[in-house]
Amino acid sequence: MRTIPGVPGAPFEYVDAESVGMDGATLAALADVTALWVAQDRIVGAEIVVLKKRKVVLHEAIGWSDREAGVAMRRDSFFRIRSMTKPFTGTAMLLLIEDGAVGFDSRVSEFLPSWDSDRTRDITVLQALAHQSGFVDGDWSIAPGDAGSLRELADGCGEHGPSHPADGQFRYSDVNTYALGAIVAEVSGMPLERFIESRLLGPIGLDETHVGYTPDAPWATRMIPTYERDESEAWIKYWMPEAQGVFPYFRASGGLVSTAFDYAKWLHFWMDEIEDDSAGMAGLSPAIAREAARAHGADEIGGYGLHWEIHGDDPLVFGHAGSDGTIGIAVPSEDLVILYFTQSRRNGTVFEWLDQARSLGIVPGAGVGSE
Image (cartoon, rainbow, N blue to C red; front, side, top):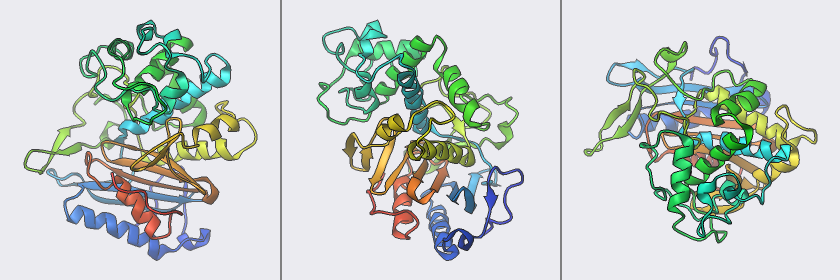
């Protein structure tokens, strides 16, 4: 293991696991599992981090960032975190609710006229936050890749309408996040990405989380390729850092680029919002934060709150995963954050890694299934 010495300039202190009550051999076993998956070709590479009491007890880069070029994974890489963007869009909406500009029971159609039809008129902001609107992916009249803006995409979803009634059933769908993002833009008078930058990234100090990517970004040398399986099940690079972003607009449900350490800061911010009885640095009250971290629905991987995945409620275990192969998990009662960042799309190990952390006793609770 090479956790210590740490990455120069890292925002967290590196310590021996035993100094914060953890077992170094157990953490090494988690790293060994990750290395085994690289050897088995289940993933191309990964960066893994465990923080206890805001200190780094495990930080490993395993495998490759660019296997064909022989470039090893590094411990300060930038990843496309895809659906791990959803909690940022959800939090943006929660801030507007905190501000009194929107209510949980406000109807989406109050802000987006395209949703003012018999099928969508009564869908509420709360139902969109909890993925209980009846929409599923594919419920749009224009595909995300063909839309020219987030608003055009959200309008296309409203015009199409949901496949199911808003009956309280949990159905995970990017459509809900498109609608929330479009409302944030409409109410705030600024694009969703600017709102996220000004109300979240800046105040929290997330200096290495960005709302987009271009090859001329000053940090572009740390951006890594993204792999997916081809028809023969071989890993191929489907996106390279020489390219622009996949979408010409900030998609709300995905689009952020970040590092493992910066996402750890984000999870620490949320743990503090949930645990503290005073308003947090971004103006989110503990009451709303706790509501967001309560399971409002459930699927095969666990519960779902208000744009957070809930993997346990006693103690609370929450976080989110992304389809390019990333996950971040927080346990407030343990002051624990774990992150597993791969660039191997839909690789099947994301929730299995959380289960491994649970089976090793690093994260409390029973396993929740597989991705």
